[in-house]
Length: 454
Image: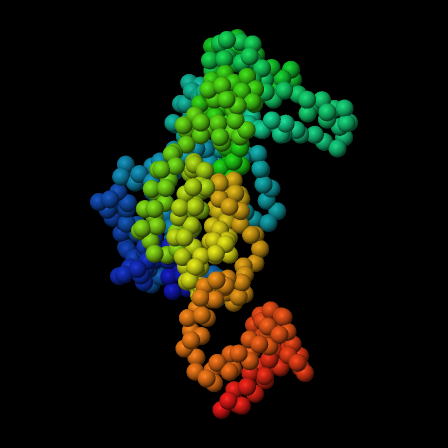
């Protein structure tokens, strides 16, 4: 093979990447190799080949690469002969890699190519492989067999059909038993099966998809059962799978959700009742530790979203109510307000929801958090206009009203008398004044009052 040229010509090659320091100006594979007039075996098992320079009888040729004509000599010739056990890579990769061989020859125009002969001669079988095949040793082996088990919510099993199938055929497929429903039925009928987990069924039974029944094995072979993996994004399916790995012999979907005689409405609640979820105190403590170790509230919400998606969390309702001020403190600061409001908390929930989606999760409401708005955020200026505390403003007016001088009080009374007399809500000067329209009329009125009072 011919290596390169790379360094100084095309440094996008893999051999030129990741080099730093004193070796930054060299190819990672050591090309071009130094020219030599003799062969020398190195201590590491790799020989230093004779590579004659062009002036000493060495060969070269010209090659056009990327619009440029370059000269390639013996220094770029890539060849290795594995002559020592120290050449581990070549001993395992080439000597024992199998039957392949390359034949090449110079042919004149009109010569006939015997493809059959070339194929037979190229199929080289070395001594190791020949001996293995003569003694009929196995080429590969996989034991035991792995059986994938169905997993679905009640009435949501997968049905495959084609456009050519009739409606009756499709209805029949829908009504067929699945591996899971057949397992439930057999648990109600067979005491031995009632003591098994779902994933243990392939050890003793084979599922006949034509009859929709689990049939007892007749020989000593066995298989491993693996329940189909699901993401925590599909919450109910995820917790249903968890229950199947901890409940022996369930007889129905409702029986799977029954714990200590109580039927729960969701699989998550049943998992919680079995104590398979970490306690609420554990996650509250974890959340508080994360809050205490970071001042970046955006990073805090991203970490919390990862916990929601990838951990078996308890209902987060109580934890959110306890820590929501800490999750939303940066939104309060950016809004310019002094007190938290529902809008501030919704900003934090919107950010958590976005991070949950980025992690592959679903709606945050499924984790016990309040639902987000799923819409554009409210502008801070509008939020401030809607968030005034009227009772607090009234107290502030009463406190500062006594501090007004005569002229200030005249301006204040003029505006307030106009508002009270016209019986309109004074909302940011957007109201009509006598003899004019819009906020400019009100502003002109105030300016006239100020001018008249000096």
